[in-house]
Length: 119
Length: 133
Image (cartoon, chains in turn purple, green):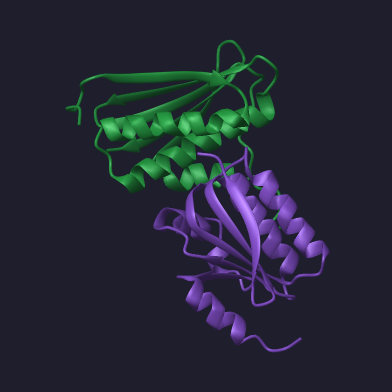
């Protein structure tokens, strides 16, 4: 299965909906979208991973790169990674990164967004 | 599940390009299902085999090159061998703490019970990824 990606917003935060498999062959489009959002100055970005069945080091590199770019300025949040994807996020160290957050579902993510201190 | 010692062989040959990684993962999935492995173990194998293939595509990929992926089960050791015909490549380690690339090898080592790299007689690289089942 290939990857499908579209962007909406949640409150004022870019909200990326990803479906399918994020691998070396498909991760470039995710990288492009994230780069554009960072270039526009966004410091909080949400990714819905509930429909993502697989991620490899290509996709993990994109997430790590995004998190590093946001360090001390903001965070990258993912919603609903399945247990296998979550295990890989842990192996590469994302789960202990201050600029990376995991939310069980959209409701929890919305609560976190509403608690942000105004810039 | 095959009984211990009984030989089991499946293989697939694909073009050495990243668009074929999903095909390789489907192959790994089919082997895992055939051997009645649990879904988590199948996922780990898919990641590790796909990473080995991605390395081959990235470093040995040239037009018309192929990857051979073979699964073999002997004595409860399931081994996937990924072989390419490019020049031999030593495994790549992450170079810097801030370097996002080079995650493939740590993932393979973490998820598998054994990871071996071989220089093929003809000069290509073979990666053997083994789990004990």
